[in-house]
Length: 131
Image (cartoon, rainbow, N blue to C red):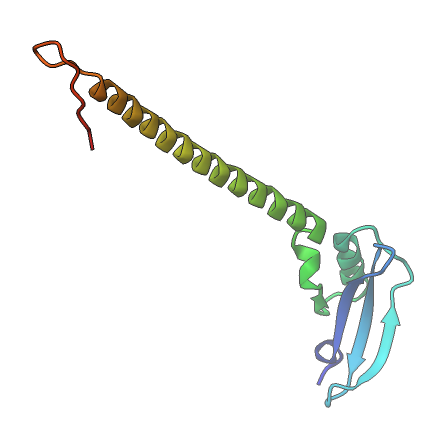
């Protein structure tokens, strides 16, 4: 196995939100033989990645998946926005449905009142029921 095949570079984010890389050489069994940590910390993952490529050209650089996706805070905010919009739409639809059913029942009761006060052709009051 050549040195390039046996070596790799790993990029990670530190607790202070800065990025570092580490060059690692492994033996045939995968055991770590040598490890060299970057002497600088970087503000972004792209700066750390380009520094690692410059220091060890041709060596594979591994970046964690969360570094390439949206930060967790942004995903969380987007989730809350979507849930809020969905809740608002569902609440609006339920209220509108309730208002429409109330309006139709009010119309029905108004018709019942009108129907119950009709007069017969002779002028007598006639009670009729509308179902």
